[in-house]
Image (cartoon, rainbow, N blue to C red; front, side, top):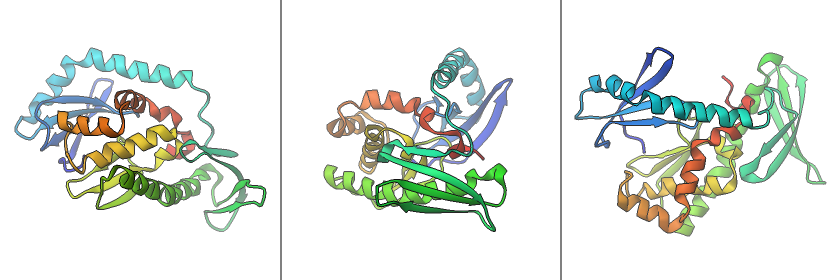
Length: 248
């Protein structure tokens, strides 16, 4: 789903948003990401000056969606501190115990004990940012585990792609370019496996149709008949991500 032009950041009173000019969009669109970020998509043939009036026209709808997302987050158990003693990667069904120690450099040592326990020893130079080496470990672990999983789903669906990378996207769970390059959000590690698999299918289908046309959704439904429910759940799936994983 890449290939759009640069984003333009803006603000309207208490509402922050981004404007993105898209070569593929056929009409003005409003999007609210799972992280509560608002995006106005403007077709390339439409003046960008239409973005703000369009946003204001739908402001009440936006406020309702954002309030609903905040309520969903508030209803969830605490997301954890910035120095967790346990990490649960639901997508991989993995549980890691974490310990911390002051060190000369920031790094993480991972080990699996004979009894199956997964241990992470985090060395940090500044206790205030002890989560930073954990984020680096998470990124490497996502690349190690998510890309082979994507390859398996690709082979099952017979939907090949060119290459895959893992990134720390702020607004998307994944994307696919016109050249078949798929990018995966490392936070997928925390989502239920059914949603991770669906996201893979969603992006793999973009290797055939780089849009959201009827033909695209027909292809998606062939491999994920419950795609509408998965799409709805993904919109609120940021609640699965612990605070340390997305702290900046």
